[in-house]
Image (cartoon, rainbow, N blue to C red; front, side, top):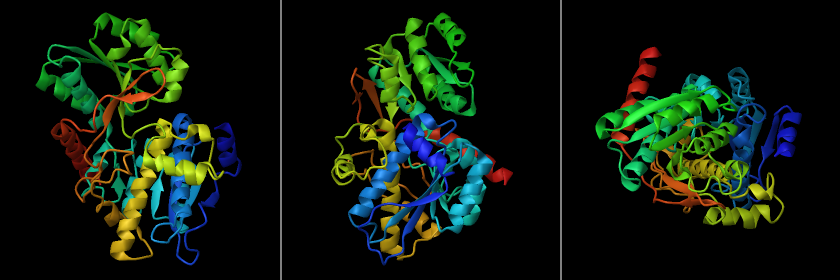
Length: 415
């Protein structure tokens, strides 16, 4: 990972990389801009995530491209800085990019008005504005996976269905004290009223390395279940502190940001039984990951360490590009080439039940719904890997869409 980060940063993030070589050389390339944070805040995930994206696009090009069109990626480091991200975006747009993925909430939020004006598709899987699920308000922005609101409601639904119900229970939300950390509060508060459980939130200061005082307060609350809402090293600290303060691992549930690396860093079997929201399948079993191993990794064409292939964050990266490539394919078939931001947008809105050959829950995107249904599942760490406990599903989407529509209205009023 360090080698990859140094390589990206060492060229000032300014290299446009062509992926693969067997798509038709005489067909115009499709350009995706992956302008991400490789050196600042999101380094716990960005290396594996971007490697998965590059390897999938390499697979597509090695097996004929998108209707014969090769995909080129423009990869630059934004260091999670909005101004730097916007500068990288402007360059990529001039170079012909029709899609951008910042994989950074601060940068993607800063770019919303720009991409809406320029009619460039921006994907915001597992980050950015949840209200961008409202495709009529944000026609060129695609969360395309479960928002944090949908993740919170699905975790609550798991407690309701599989851990003795919610009524009269005490639920603690332990979160990083940031907008991301506080995001699930509105939907959980509404559920608390509907289902009759107690909810208290406990914030800890960023970056989350020190949480002992917070967990002392949690211990005094004596919760039945704890939902942890952070990312990176802070999640490891949360798991350790929860267990140290008497919370059974089986009663700890996490937002999507809890990985194999986190589990191993917690050590031993201490994390066995901890649960998380899962947006895509992990491991190498999915057919598309097997194809990447065969056509990209084994021939030595991979973008990073083979050890990362199949990790949770790698597979999320693969899934984002699988959806984007499917949108491009549908758009070219329907509207022809070259792709524009607008025809690519329409391609996204034609996606119906796409699951990337079992890698992810079936996604259907429409002009109204850019979230894709808010599906996911709950998995549990078993000491070696993340083991799915449920089928793909969603929960309490009427509550989620109330928040989406409320925030989208606020965006419209502020424009």
